[in-house]
Length: 54
Figure 1 (spheres, one colour):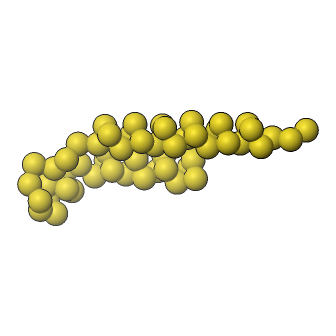
Figure 2: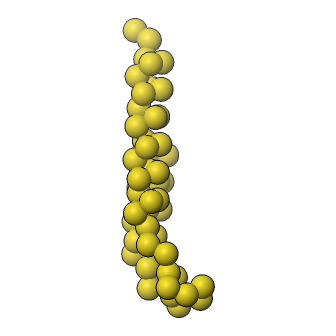
Figure 3: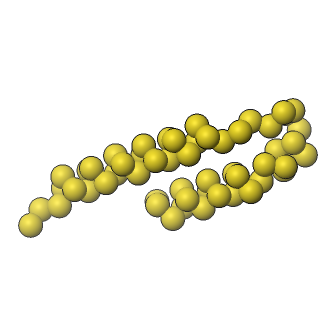
């Protein structure tokens, strides 16, 4: 049984999910490392989701 269509569909779904996750990331108020560090849990969560699904 060929799974090409299912794999393509699954890849598209994962790409959409990752895109939605990126759109929900907040931008830091200032362009400093401390401002970015305050959002570290959100960025870490996104990174882990991306690595797990990759």
